[in-house]
Amino acid sequence: MNRTKQVSAAQRQFGIGDLLQNEKEVAIRELAERFGVSEMTIRRDLDRLARGGKVRRTHGGAVATERMVFEFDFVARRQSNRRAKQAIAAEAVRLIRPGDRLILDTGTTTLELAHLLKNIGDLTVLTPSLAVASELQFFEGIETVLLGGVVRRGRADLTGMVTEAVLDMFMVDIAFQGADGIGADGALYTADIQISKVDRKIREQAERTYVLADSSKIGKTALTRHGFVQQVDALITDDGITGKDKRRLERLGAKVIVVSTNS
Image (spheres, one colour):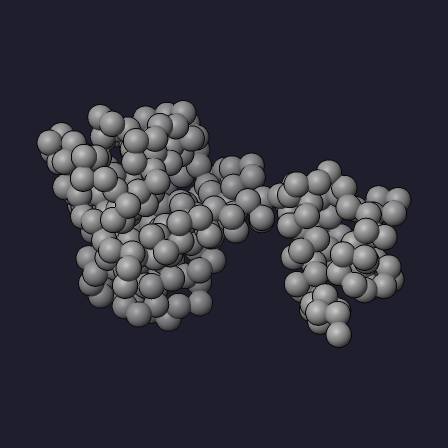
């Protein structure tokens, strides 16, 4: 039996989306041959994706919409170094107690932390991340406050003057932030100017701040610098960090918590 014929509709549609990350357009005939199904079946798959706003039908095929590109980019970012991100989140959740007020910044590592909060309860969580808010909305015992603001194009984050103004209304016990890069001098970097402003404001509104960043971010830079790791309570990273990098950051005055990815 041809194993490709056993692929479900959902798997085919995901596969079509995956192909569109590398190709400008996919053709019905080629997709039918690839997945071992009829052209009519592929047309139905494309129609379903089109109704969801993920592809735009063309004569004989389809092209990806911006929405599909965003969704696959987000999935790829979440899966990147995921084991390290989960280990970091497991360490971070140990810092939280029932009754705490938290801010969870944008990012895939803070999203992993959000998933673990269901085991605590009695929490108030502020976030500018639509993804984090979506993760938390069904957890009993967690009051989720989605900060207002402008939705970043191509990202599920809120930024801008409204976000900063709303943050001024709150004080929290702990803030958890991500980073696009941590420079050799301990500088915290993000790729977006507006996000950097929100990151600074978040630290101002928190009694304690922890940066959650996997070791691939160490030594990297991005567009804007919004602070230094020695200004926060600790950097939580994974055991991929080199001893040299860890010692350098500690000499700068940073506290570095290293978690194992082997468990």
